Length: 461
Ligand code: PA5
Image 1 (cartoon, rainbow, N blue to C red):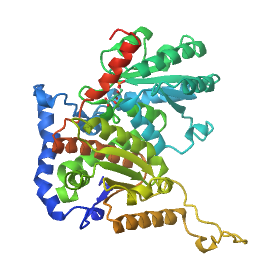
Image 2 (image 1 turned 90 degrees about the horizontal axis):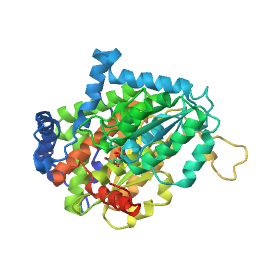
Image 3 (image 1 turned 120 degrees about the vertical axis):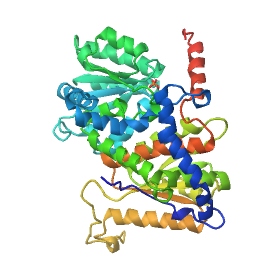
Image 4 (image 1 turned 90 degrees about the vertical axis):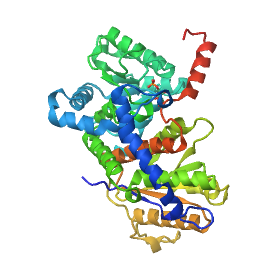
């Protein structure tokens, strides 16, 4: 299937404040090298197991997941991991009105993005029939918020429910404490059924793995070796909850595989990953633009934006470099942030993300007999035409103010498009790290708060 995600850099060619085509051409060979490093060198190093110190950690296997999982599913369906995910999801659907997904950071944000992008808005409020028999999905273990946990526990009291707990290390305190709290409640509600109702997704050792053995969990999934937390959305981490929600995970992987192919095979000038990352990198180097506003033009993509915030910040925010990501949702944030984007400090690039298709019927502005709001002049116009006008108007205003813009266009917010988008941004982050000389994997800074927190709580490390 051909990829229909497009990247347009025409908003970057600005005389005084943007880029020149020449600068881009001069970067081409480095982009090619970074691509080669991502798909060939790193893979060879991982296979050999001899990873030099300066490359440690090297968690680049996310790149292999889409094709690997699909191949296995195509060739040995009955024993494949995708089949296991789908059958566990069916089990959870059959036994649960609600599934609580526990996890934080890379073990949470991608799943949230999938739900918000691919499911109906207000999914959890739909009745069982309208949810297609799929469970409501709630998220916890992503904070230490007393009131939020209490509210969810109260909400679950009269439902049949289960837990999917996701932690690669198995030792993250927020998730582990939430698991303990929710396990108590689950035991009370469904005594004797923990083994079927708790599904861990974790590394092959660690405390969560041990706890799963103690419970005797019937279904356990692994975060694959060599896949970093924030790069794990297309592993069981994101795919299991997605399958519970009825999202077409095969399509999502096909979208990601299509992006991999495009990344590998198309020249720099037509390569969405290299176009995007090349422009973002050059703007930072030549114009000091180190704030990246991911400006999504569909509410459904806000959580995908927040997922990217984590991906970029945690991967490249090291050694005092790395752009600061910010997600904006339009047109909502035209009324809060756009003033600054247009007239504030010249340290921002706007990365628009739009979709060609809506997922439901198109609404039009109705005609009314009385017209005090004078909107009959818009009567019959689809909402999408108004959104398009806002988008064009904003881009023109930004161009007139000499503000660089990168445009990314997705087909829709469905599973295939989201798979493409996830993979594009993961690949871009790795390539950008290579250009900056930053290892995109690992997050040494985050360990400090964890360790301090444990000392304050007088816990054994
Ligand atoms: O990207 C990462 O590795 C982190 O954001 C982790 O996903 C996050 O800290 C949660 O870790 P774990 O899955 O080990 O509980």
